[in-house]
Image 1 (cartoon, protein in one colour):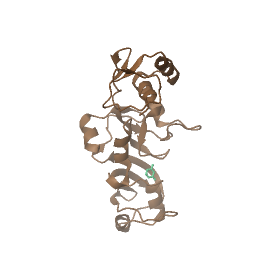
Image 2 (cartoon, helix red, strand yellow):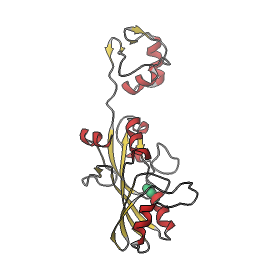
Image 3 (tube, helix red, strand yellow):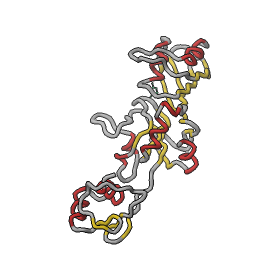
Length: 231
Ligand code: URA
């Protein structure tokens, strides 16, 4: 990572202030004064000091949010509020959203500053199951279970969907477990069966379930155990 990026993450100072401090000779990497922010450092190995005081990297952040309707899963958006605007933490806009939900979908969203962890959760290779509660306009026939299991060809896609689990809860309600996250996937799978999703809520991602204590729009830090079970 670039030294100036690391310093601005660790201290919350602007890049401009960091540049000034670097020029002044206030920053050392392994006891050597470094004046260029472009120098690459290894935050695990190198000792980075500011005016002789070691700077620790900020703690990695892992959160779960109960996404309300009307918010977009994006780092910024010109027309709609983003889920990151609900996070009252320094530099929230830099966090990574692990697996996006549509604007009208509610429920569990995982948010982190750990890129590798986010990748493990979202990459289809890792087959992390995402469980959705679905309500549909028309009744869901039993035959849909087999179609989800076999995988479907969706419009404009080149490959069948991965096997998915469909559990019928009532005539118009079901639970769907997907191990991939294609664009509007649940809605498109039901559309391929001639049905329409009227409500969609994500209940869990892998072994982590949305905390029932969280009202829509609320979030909490994940416990160490939740972070490990997901990663
Ligand atoms: N599938 C969808 O269609 N929408 C979502 O938000 C998530 C999965």
